[in-house]
Length: 190
Image (cartoon, rainbow, N blue to C red):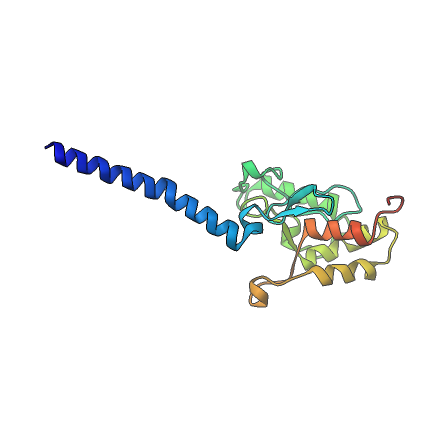
């Protein structure tokens, strides 16, 4: 009887050691070796070493000089990632979209859906190139530049997911705004 208990305890110890210690350490080592940027959260770091955000998580930008991300049901808090779970017929969703349209796009027109609806996680860092173009006039005029100058930057940084195989062109809001500050600073800033 004791030999069965002992063999089960040895098997339990080996299983815990392999599954809870060895395997996670191996995956961590491979991630750090093969894709260290992705494994560490795809952080965006300035030249001076300060971390300004992640390429994978949206953050809020306010002011007319910046492109604004999609609305966030999580308040741009990565720890609270969630969708609003409001269906298309929900009056609360319709009311929130109407308010967003009046605040962000008072001129009206055909506004892309991602401009006024949250993503499933509430933290999508990308907006469609069409949504970014809806914001062009506001961003360019607040920076004292012509629309074509800012649009050229957008076109340069836009990409199509899956290496161009699927979907519409997107821009990463954090990367575009950082590049705007670097190349086309706001009037009165260094």
